[in-house]
Every structure is written in C-alpha cells, then in structure tokens.
Amino acid sequence: MHVVVCVKQVPDTTNVRINPKTNTLMREGVESIVNPFDEYALEEGLRLKDALGAKVTVVTMGPPQAAVVLREALARGADDAFLVSSRAFGGADTLATSYTLAQAIRKACGGKTPDLVLFGKQAIDGDTAQVGPGVSEFLGVPLVTYVKALEAKADGAFTVTTAMDDGEHVVEGRMPCVMTVLKEASTPRFAPLAGWMRAAKADIAVLDEKAVEADPVRIGLKGSPTKVVTIFPPPTKGGGEKVDARGDAAAGARAIADFLAKKGLVK
Image 1: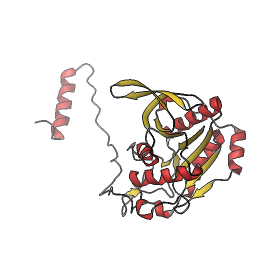
Image 2 (image 1 turned 180 degrees about the vertical axis):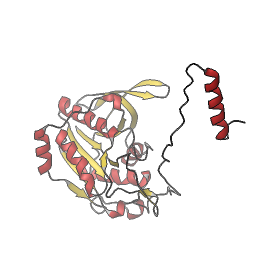
Image 3 (image 1 turned 120 degrees about the vertical axis):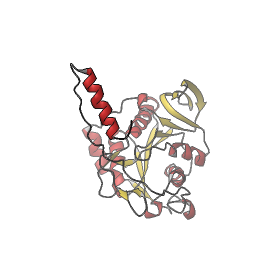
Image 4 (image 1 turned 90 degrees about the horizontal axis):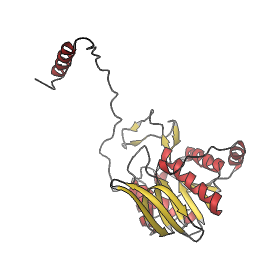
C-alpha cells in the first residue's frame, strides 16, 4: 500500500503580509508553520504504516523553504519526500495547485496513482478546502471528505466515519481514493530525536514544471482562472468600554444605551 500525504507550509497567522501588486500572500521572510490540519492527515498515514506496512510519501508545493515541513514529516516517520517548487508555480489558485499536485503525485509514485492520498481538511491561510477535492478530480479517483475515523485493510478496502453538517456518516469503499482528514481523527505523534537526525540527512527530491510534465498554461498565474481583486488582513480589534453595573443595574443599562447611541447603532 502506498499512501501520499500532502502537507503545506503556511504563514504564521500572527504575521500575515500581503503583496499589494499580486494580491497574494507573501511567504519569503515570513515565519511559517506546518498547516495544523495536515498533521492529522500525516498521522493517519503513519498509522497505516504501523498497522499495514504502508509506504508513506509526503509532498508539498511551495518555495525552497517549504522543505522544512517535509523534514518534520520524515522525522515523524514518513519514508520519502518531494518538494514541488518552481517560480512557474507562483500565484497558483486552487485549480492550478490541484493540477500541479496531481502531476507531482504521479511523478512521485513512478507514473502511477497511489492507493491513498491524504490531506488535512483545509489550509489555514486560504480556508478554501478545495485542493483535496481538486486533486481527486485530476487523479480520477473517488473522494471522501471530513474523515474523523479511518480503518483500512491490506487489500485496499476501507471504512471511514465522516462528520458532515447533517451528522456522521459511515462510508465503505476501496482504494484508490483521496481523503481529507479532521483533527478528531487522531493525535499527531512527536518526532523522536533519532527521527530528526535521520531527516536532517535525508535527500529531498525537488520537482519543477518539467519534472512533473506540467502543461505550462495550466500552472501558476496562467493556469488560474480565479483572479483576486483585492485582499487584506482583518483590521486590528479596538478596545471596548467596561461598564460596572454592580449595585445599579439601571445606571449600567443607561451607560450601554449611551455607548450604542454614540456609535450610531441606536437612536
């Protein structure tokens, strides 16, 4: 069984900067972290390795600095890693990203489709939850989203529990498949010291647009039909006013009414 886990390096949410010319997130020089939801997807892949002897490959798309998240995945127990990186991929929307990752996944698997591809439910920088479903379309395999429990057998059969708006569902199927994973699925393991030492020496293959045999009009900004008109960080929240109405509820109510009136919220 071959499991591919897609992870993403995202800007720390406390330090988000926007490129005013391209309306895209600025990643270089910004402190980054591994997308938290991807840690749960990785753990599910490693659990399949522990239980069934699955091979776990991690893939990320990003600038050279994104190799850090791959080394962390290797330290935790992944078998190999691929960095999908080229300036030609810059500015990609979710469609172009999905296409590029699907091409890279096939390349990482020797031209074949892996048994299982795992994603976190979404990335905290874009919050679209579209790339996992997009990769399933480009790979031509079924999709199961919002997985909170996964059981698989060596023959490729699986049973998952998903958490949807209308409640939980039990889905049975057979691989190949793409799944997006919720944080309820498991608790990510820590990387042991020996794992970090091994990861530090590991070779990480870098795949550019030629390596993944990508159509140049389907990657990066050229392959992105979604155009961001404007983007900006949320405004900093201002301080409020504290009203102490202990012992005089009427005075407190008047103070609140006066505050709302000053804001033009009531007359």
